[in-house]
Length: 157
Ligand SMILES: Cc1cc2nc3c(=O)[nH]c(=O)nc-3n(C[C@H](O)[C@H](O)[C@H](O)COP(=O)(O)O)c2cc1C
Image 1 (cartoon, rainbow, N blue to C red):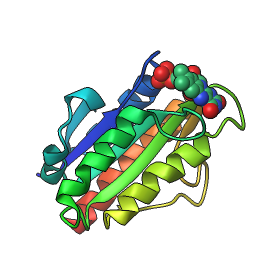
Image 2 (image 1 turned 120 degrees about the vertical axis):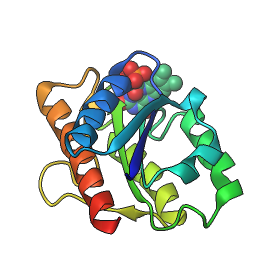
Image 3 (image 1 turned 90 degrees about the vertical axis):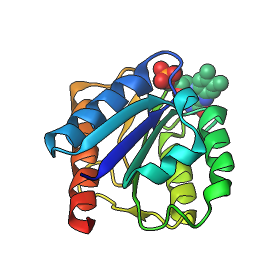
C-alpha cells in the first residue's frame, strides 16, 4: 500500500495541530501514514514514501531552519524523489505575516526535487495556512489537503 509521510516542526503546537488534521485526511483515504516531528526524520527516509507533506511555522516569512535543514540535506537524494506527490502548510502569527510565502518556499523545494504538487482552485490555493491556533475551518482545509494528496497518490500508484 502506498505510504504518506507528514513532517512538521512546531515550537508551540499550532503547526502540529494542523499536521494532525492533515493526518486525519490521509487516513480517511485508507493509506499508510506516518506523522513525524522533523527531528525524527532522516533525509533517507524520504525515499520510502509516495507522498510527502511538510508543515512549518512561518519564521521571518519563510520556513523554520529545522525544515530547511532537512531539505538541504535531502540533496543527497536529488533526483530520487521525482514523481512523488507533495504538499505544504504553515502557521503564522499574523495575517500577512508570510504564511503563503512559507508554503510556496516549501513547495518550490519539492518541485525542484521533481515532485508533483496539486493546487486547489477553491480555498487556500497553495496549501492550508492558519493564524496562531488553527480554527475549525483551518483544520478542515488541512483534512482536505491530506485527502487530496492521498487521492493523487492512489491515482498514480
Ligand atoms: C523566530 C520566529 C519568527 C517568526 N516569524 C514570523 C513571521 O515572519 N510572520 C508571522 O506572522 N509570524 C512569525 N512568527 C510567529 C509564528 O509563526 C507563530 O507563532 C506560529 O503559530 C508558531 O507555530 P508553532 O506553534 O507550530 O510553533 C515567528 C515566530 C518565531 C519564534
